[in-house]
Image (tube, rainbow, N blue to C red; front, side, top):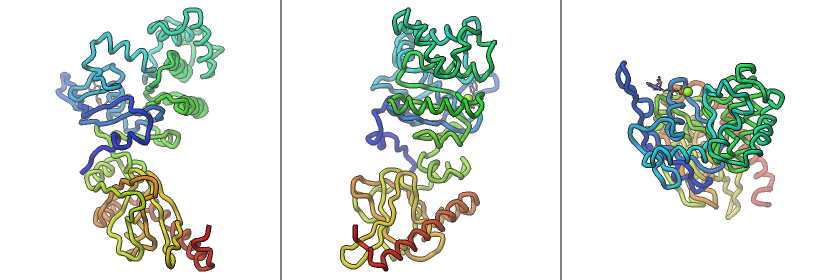
Length: 384
Ligand code: ADP
Ligand code: MG
């Protein structure tokens, strides 16, 4: 039942830039075979700021290497603007990479015999971008942007690890590539410098660049437009990861196999009020209105829920009938992931943290409902 939604979601997002299709990566060495990626489907779009998170060893760097062209898949495809990059010649691929990707490596890989300014200029020289006499000026601007202006003439070993990392970020920006790929770019930075880099990435994505950032810091995901979770070489369903972030990764994966994907047309009723609710729903796409019905045509929309929100939990946890009706928003079709009561109960038992978080939301929503009921009784119902 689990399927990937990225291609279906493509219409809401920018243009698809990179499509990773059924990618498997197996390493063979003296110890035998190890499969680091086990069938990855992922589409990256224009102007997205994507966090790739997962434990150490889960396959994050390997995944990046699949589309930076540093390594290649064992099976599967990586398609860029309709072209399979591994069907290209080596030289064509290398040119594609130079023009399209700015890469911040996990271990920076600054050239030790070049100063920071020269390191930043290197990619411009490589792809032949900007006039030769413009390059130092541009490199200096980039160093200023990451706070390294005063260190431009120093060799990498003469500055701190964090400063080397910032220089590597400046270098990745030097060719103005549409896609910036960064492997743990804030891993060696203090929180102030890390925030500065995230601000910079946010600004770049707002200006249309695609940023793909690997991090093991789950709090970073609050700042990105999208989070992709990888666990033992498999992507976790994005809706589940966002809606129920406190689940452990194995539980997220188990849940992925239990959800049913259901669709509703704009305005269509999903739950009728005063009916028994037997499912928990997470919104994968679109939004829903929570509605109280009055006499005649007087409906009151008490709240709107959007992508990655959930509903149905009040009824499942408290037993009993729905306290309001829920219908698909009037503009767009809605895609939901539904979980049966039995699976919901299983999940609550397996993850006390999630149970607590959902319990808090139930409290809040019941309070809001009470206020709406009060408004309804006071006769404000239905009026604009
Ligand atoms: P992450 O970046 O999430 O920490 P990696 O993608 O670097 O993880 O590695 C994923 C898994 O693949 C790890 O178990 C790692 O040991 C293994 N791996 C990575 N590169 C190689 C390689 N060149 N040869 C053998 N195993 C590798
Ligand atoms: Mg890594």
